[in-house]
Image 1 (tube, rainbow, N blue to C red):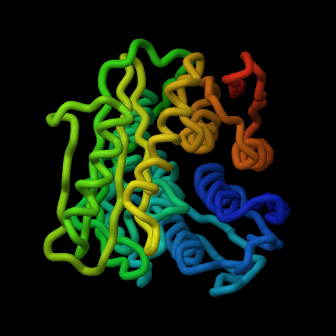
Image 2 (image 1 turned 45 degrees about the vertical axis):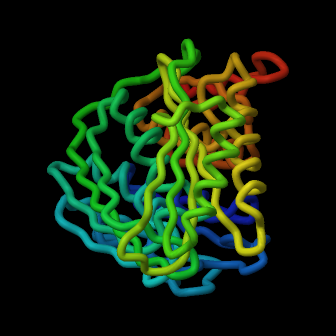
Length: 340
């Protein structure tokens, strides 16, 4: 079995998750050292360890060194087996990051799979369940991947306790996708998700977002979590253009006024809206490289070419024979081209 030597010092958990996904899809083993070495808490946290363990479970892999705090592991994949799987983080760590690790291997498997993931669903340092359901999976569907996500129960930091159910169908072949233009703006909607907190907090957040984006009542949504497992607050702005939808997520913080939380989210969405020549948002751009590489090509424009995107591109090219070019379009956009 081929073995790739990787150094994780240039990135965080995303590099490990990408390596796990591609190892399962290509049958290539890897060792990674210096995992999250520059972070305040280096090595594997619970969500990273769960991703490793889950990847090993669905891919019949042999793993060496996987434990909390470990800064190096060896991962030797076997055959990916479709089936019914249940993975619980035991913390408020992100279930969505575990899901993104497993998805490519499962859509390459020979049958349908069902996943139940328990833990955090709306985390400040990870894509939210709403982003995955409303932005990421619809883009994958345009590439031929059939997967659905149902949010059974939201989970927030620090209590966790969330649960999602995901169904993934096999994908015999993927289509290459070009996301160069977003088309005319069709709608903007704001949603507040609140658990075990005063309803007035969510109302104040919605008021700010309604003012910033001139939203009518039917574009403002309030979701209360019942029964509540612990306090939590997330807010989303969904921007629908004719050819693409983006979901932006903000998170309430203890001691930070609701208005400040909403203003931060509004600025994030506004930065995307003002970059009129870019189709894809910053976070989706990071996540599209891997499926496009597996599809053998594709391209998109984005308003931010992040360090995450560039380091992820370098790692992907160690597993898959593709070229990934990041080219300036103008002062407000980049074009990312994946060529097989």
